[in-house]
Image (cartoon, rainbow, N blue to C red; front, side):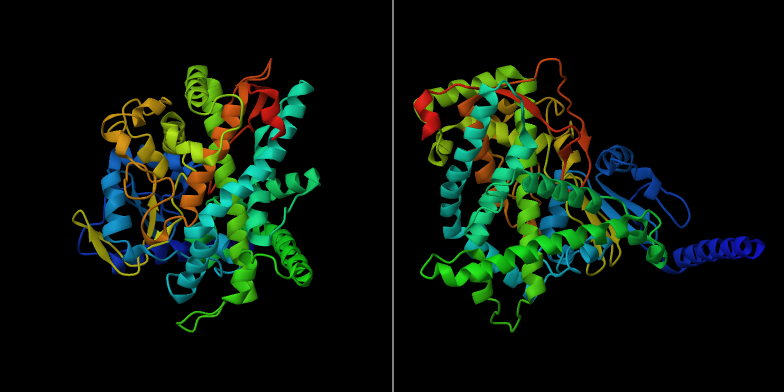
Amino acid sequence: MIFLRELFAAAILFFITRYFIQRIITKPRRPLPPGPKGWPVIGALPLLGKMPHVALFELAKKSGPVMYLKMGTCGMVVASTPEAARVFLKTLDLNFSNRPSNAGATHLAYNRQDMVFADYGPRWRLLRKLSNLHMLGGKALKEWPRVAAIELDHMVQAMCKSSGQGEPVIMPEMLTYAVANMIGQIILSRRVFATNRDESNEFRDMVVELMKIAGLLNIGDFIPSIAWMDLQGIEGGMKKLHTKWDALITKMIKEHQELANEGKGKKPDFLDVIFANRENSEGERLSNVNIKALLLNMFVAGTDTTSSIIEWALAEMMKNPTILQKAHVEMDAVVGRNRRLKESDIAKLPYLQAICKETLRKHPPTPLNVPRVSIEACEVNGYYIPKNTRLSVNIWGIGRDPNVWENPLDFEPERFLCGRNAKIDPRGNDFELIPFGAGRRICAGMRVGIMMVEYILGMLVHAFDWKIPPGTDLNMEEAFGLTLQKAVPLSAMVTPRLAAHAYTA
């Protein structure tokens, strides 16, 4: 026992000594950006707490728009204003085009064989190209509204049934079921949860768990020499979750291949296209692991971001009934009450679009961008940024900055209807509002995501009136992860407001 204590003390002394020696050896001649000092060895890790986006927002008030933190043995720079984000994600975009290696990328994303965490290069370009051409952009965009209309019909029928029975609807469950089936129709030509609601709830639990565990600050990511110890048990949890996901995705692919011969003559779906185009002109070939990893990206990111944005928007309207009323007035004038809203109606509904923008500002799907890392040393605002420095853009903080937005804590869609804000677009060029990131590593599903959020939210708001269930409070607290979830799932009482025949269409 005495020997173990002495060994532990010697190990601590070794790490502290090495830490100070490395600081002396690697200390740059040019100044690093300002930031909190932190502690020896662990650096600023304890400062981030359970809500890192909030902690970094508060620290930036003292340190400035470009802040540097020593996170264990790793350096991290944080951009907290639109101007700082523009420098990193536009001017220096290529230098910050790679992702840092971490436990989530290793254990959840098939050792970075996916599109989100892959290094910028031939394989990433092939994954991105195939996704844009055949699922997330171009002609593929025209297919989504048709698929969405089918799934929304199932969703509306279920909500009408709950309304008739006087029961509340649990929106995350409804949304996950519908959106996952939409993605399944595009990728696999079938609904993935056709009848079994228990399966869809298990799927949602897996999605939420993945986004939560991937967003945790894992000590081993920042002090690699002790990663093998898995002090927080995070990596063990990731491995177990990956086993579940791999089994589900393997089953999807196997069933798709078994049904392929029976469906001769059918229009190729996304998985058909991927298998048929798994090589590119640069000699890069997608492996079966690459394909499974890409499907994981599509199902997890697609369902989680879309459903969470819609859930936050509905919660804000239930909290502010006058906003819901204004949306109803606009929709009744444009669409009426004799039919359901169509995707083609969205362009004529500026207030609905403003609600979506305001939700993306106040509740961005990713509060901190998926981290990037510098390929080479560079300079920003006169400060030295070393090679292999991690980059975090506080998207949530930019949306809450009173120097950028008037009354930032208030939910005011009207801010996007006039003046300079009316021209702001969330597609990555206006750095005041970058909910999907910006630059070459911007979210691949951005265009589909915006279209589907506007369409699904519009359909739900037009078709129903929304109220808080009697005897309950509307909880607006956040739960941190790679995506920003509501801490308490939204429960709502819905009442049909259209002509009866509109619900049987």
